[in-house]
Length: 259
Image (cartoon, rainbow, N blue to C red; front, side):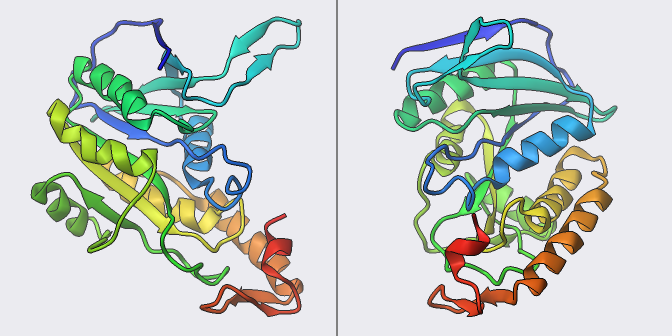
């Protein structure tokens, strides 16, 4: 795997830094269903003042470039952002997408950099792939697991429903399993899919847990308004949920609501 880590600011983070990985798939087939992590990252970047201090480029990312307004170009990569909220350093990894290959090699680059920054806790955010869709208007539960038993207990204390006896796939899950090899406690937070994009209810649920992790309230009143607006659209479309077989209840089909 070709890779390049560009560090613009080599400041040290001394207030118990937490690495929050919020990258979603770039697979066109799943990008709308499983974009919760990317949406969360964008929401936090708009909500709070972060400073970008590093970027990671790798051949495992989609083979694409960004053409700027002046005709120059940039590689597509992911960025590390930092924010100190007076209690804890939050390092956010956000960007175009999660890797589309070489997940272990890409994870090594992220975790090796995190270790150098003295990160001891890391949380990866995503959607759950292995569950039937929840009804579109249901408030998603936050599900999770950890790399160690102590982490599982912490998640329980924060109201997270622990995943058990199932497989978990792709980068957002694999990097949690890799974390302990770097002296880092890893956590995974996810929500079941079923809510149409832009997933306001899912973001509200995830934000509530992350607020507890960073010791700072994330005000989600604008997301609550967005959820109510989305509910009106869904109800006016006579689309109120999905059956266990994934068929629409009402006059619309599942594919229509996600377009």
